[in-house]
Picture 1 (spheres, rainbow, N blue to C red):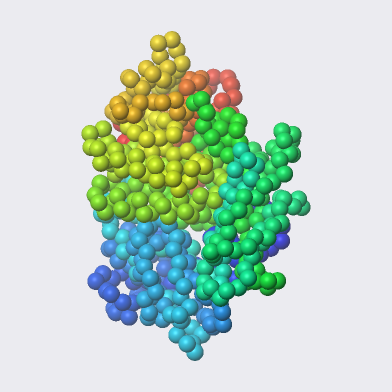
Picture 2: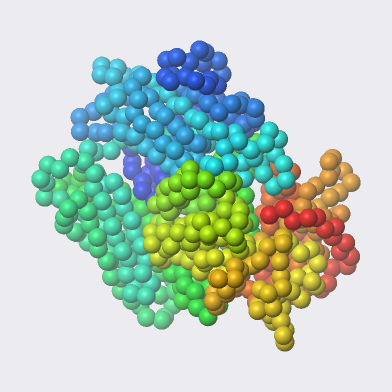
Length: 616
């Protein structure tokens, strides 16, 4: 286990704690055994014919780890469990769900308390008033509805067919992230946000209040520190239920002390934040959080981190595990993935078609890993899909914008859900609208409107190209007389698509090869073979192909970064650098050297990659 951000132990150091950016002392995990039933057409948990199974939450019922292991479930599943709790004066009990796919309704002691739609974002209900009085044992019931073939709902890599095909994986139905209880005061801090402004060497601080207004003389105290070094300890008056302030830090100039305070993958310095809501000298609420000083900018075709050019060396990360699907098997598994990613020479990941568990983002903050966050796609363009995708994407940005590890937002991938961008204006308008909405909600990060091709609104021009011949890949994107980017944009058609739409030509944005490679390794002892965009016959061949492809990408000098496909094998898609069990397919130091562009002797094994038709 990596070291905690906090030197002393809080209950939030528990591996199940789901919200490290806004920690409170009083909480309880509800992960574990729940009663489970499959029943459609039922309006209330009391009408369930039989609670005939048990499930281990938070694992989806399609997963082995859930104890259900059933991929043929219908659209409606039910959960039930009991909790022990005694109501206390002036204390509210909140019931939190990390994520439930796709629609959820919740009852407490038979009383309906609320509903939520969106399979990848958190929600909570204040269940205090629903708890029956004079009882210490209470019942929580949850209904989850997830259309197996619902192509108009954001589903990412979840297959709509009965068996996973091509590049899609098993479905995830119902609860798949932590369920937990939190005790809070009636009058409390509802939101705490810290945003770095590197150009002014300040931190933006925002705190919002929730609860009955009793006319208190309220103040908010903010304390910022790094190790034993105190950066700020300020008191602010509360006006109109919120506080908005800029915290000026001492600017050390251009010496080493400034660099030590900046966050980067090479030096992931985090600033601890303690926030108190005070009524006079009385502490009404206490929050622990964190932030970082770091900035992301674009300049003259380059990506900048902390005002210095910083090449993106990313790997595509699907975020799946064989027995637990989208849910990480443990916090150690999340840490291990980050450690393997960095050991292989990458400084970041493109989380593909998945809004990752917040604990992963926490450890990416702590250990130092860049993250491109991508919205899971819908696959049909309808009014419903537009409304659903937009609503959930806003919730994603709201949940994750405080993580310093996130450096790029990606609302669309490969025109999925907007399949006719070149010809249909409303498809283009949707991409453009989400691009501008994202920039409005978070102007501090670049946005890639549609990753891969058919670019219509973007801060970074991204290209997906699974050319398996390193020489052809280099010739296509090398800076040569009469060639280079203008020629590539004119003549390259990866997967038969144009890179930019005619009315939206390249305008100087940095260029990132955001998908390439996808090399599988087929050996004689593997039953059923292995799927990839190209296939090699041994680990030696895989290493040689990887080294030559990465050498071509580094040599092209066109790209401000790249993203190799992919980190691990994922079900039938066996083109990872690591197996699904996270075992390396060849020497990790060799991966590191090739990823970083360190020159080495040519591999002795000839490369004979077998082309496969790209499938997005």
